[in-house]
Length: 169
Image (cartoon, rainbow, N blue to C red; front, top):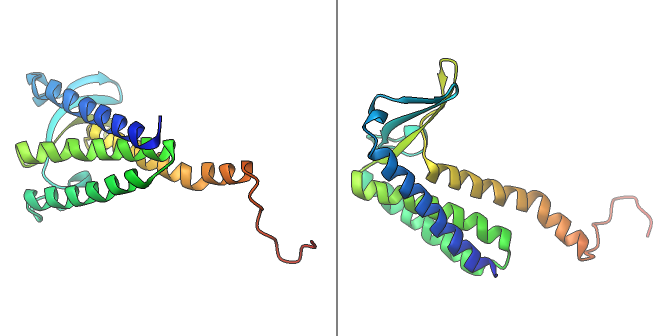
């Protein structure tokens, strides 16, 4: 399977996972008060009107965040279309699916539905959702691919290593 098809499949899977879990969270009235799932994980229903960690909430209108998100998704779709790598296809698909999941929330609710609340004692990480998880996983894959796998692939194909200063040929 080529990278494009794999990316499209991952985007659809990420979008379905995100929207499905958000529908479950929205349909659970107990989450309005919070439910302890594990000693480090609560499920709580939160509406994020900003971007990451609520930044820019109330400063930038919700429709502007939608337009910005769609412009970014369009650029990533072009990147996916041009990519030949399956790893990059998976990574970009995860980012696209997660971003579109949050765009759907902004269109429906003028904010993003978050419900995962990890904490250590009294310190709580800002609540997030599975769209955020897929975006982070996709970006991490892109970083790992760019930093490590790409170099290993070049070495495996016999690309000459760059000459060091002072080395004899």
